[in-house]
Length: 354
Ligand SMILES: [Zn+2]
Ligand SMILES: [Zn+2]
Image 1: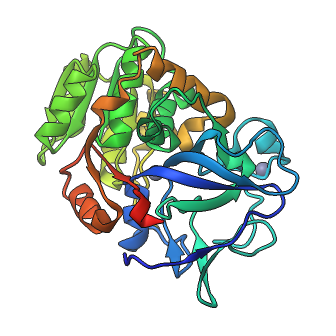
Image 2: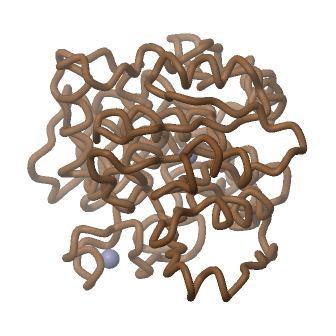
């Protein structure tokens, strides 16, 4: 990624201009510039996790005004289709041209050149998004911490609470304990799951998982994960959250299930990859394999809920950010993400970035 000076055009109908305080360093962005996810249109500003302050509202915007503190949703949806009405905007397919906002145009320019959006493009400290993407939260919460709600919390905790609907006493295994997986561990703990098994190849992530509620950990290093999960849960997990973009991990997740168990696919493997599942285990044990996009959450309802849980001390988000970076260090932040060195890295914007 290169740091460039660009122009941000004013918000149009139904849009808002937001000055971001911070942005998260997320695996889906890493996959976009390492080529394993191919949904971004170049040249592009990436970034799917952010929080900040509304600077300007476009014509027709109601319910938001300059000065409001907001967390950015990467799935605003169109607001009027069946999935949006059901409160599942991440499933909305009524999008405009790839990389564009409504009207099939973009709000970023470099000279005369059009720069495309990728979701909310939160690696720009100033963004224009549909007003539905800016979810107002209490001004009493630090915006740096609230940033995590925009992707990692919603994706990871939502997979447990909303997609799998984990019940008290069910066993949960979380494969991959980065920013998303650790939120799954926190949510499993909140839901009263037991045991909670965390699996990762990096010891510091397992240590964090243990602090956040995991009751058993498995240092993944080439051994059969399914066998380790079955042994830690006494026969298989009721719910497995696969929070890593890896086909083998999904296959092992399915093999880790107790009869009737659910394997929730959260991480995105490389575009084009396939998985192989034994249909006899699927049928005979009535296993369920399900996908989870944005934790099956409805941001206008769920963002304020997560923020309240944080304020009440039940969602320990402060323990998730292992390091903050300046915007000029963003490539280093992604190198550290790729090498598994951070729990969640956060880029904090400063005045020099504007
Ligand atoms: Zn993300
Ligand atoms: Zn829609």
